[in-house]
Length: 114
Length: 115
Image (cartoon, rainbow over all chains, first blue to last red; front, top):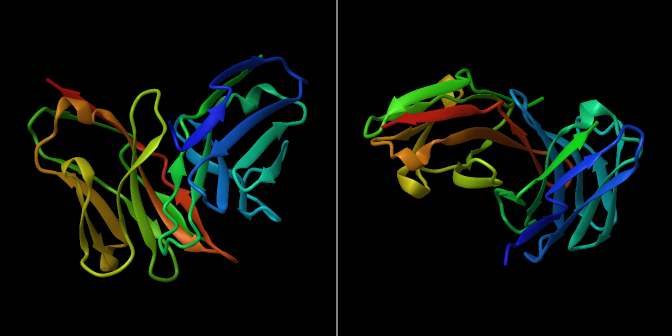
């Protein structure tokens, strides 16, 4: 079984709808991250959480919110989806005991907003 | 603020040829540096990483990278490319920020391998 899972893997939604993307991990890591990937722009950080009670905005947090329900779960919400939020979304985790903070990625969720 | 530049958007090489993907970074202290690979429809997989020590780092799948502080570079190399290496490659720099590291990614280099 995969260590970092994301649901759903694909989602098509309409402008104005609220949607939630979920991430679960079995690696026991404290730190979790949400990124979006757009062609030609690489990965950009949306939100990150260094532990259950610590949540921080990344470089592109506008229009998004997150919830860290438990150490293993980190959800990303789009309150009112818009077409320019169409992208590939990745969840990642890292271990605070790892000096390099290497990040482990989920398989991604492809979101289309029409 | 930290940043990463991958100047080549697309690279095409013949199978069996050598490969070098360029990465330049900007960071005020000694950086953590990473190379990730993303195969079509997949998530990102770590190829190798560097923080300190030997400036030539060996990774998985026969890849290596060399850290050159004077040039602020961390180029990825492979002596002989296989068709299965076709993928997108991302360089990233990690910087400490209040409790842990954050990664900043480059825009990626798409590698095509000609048979």
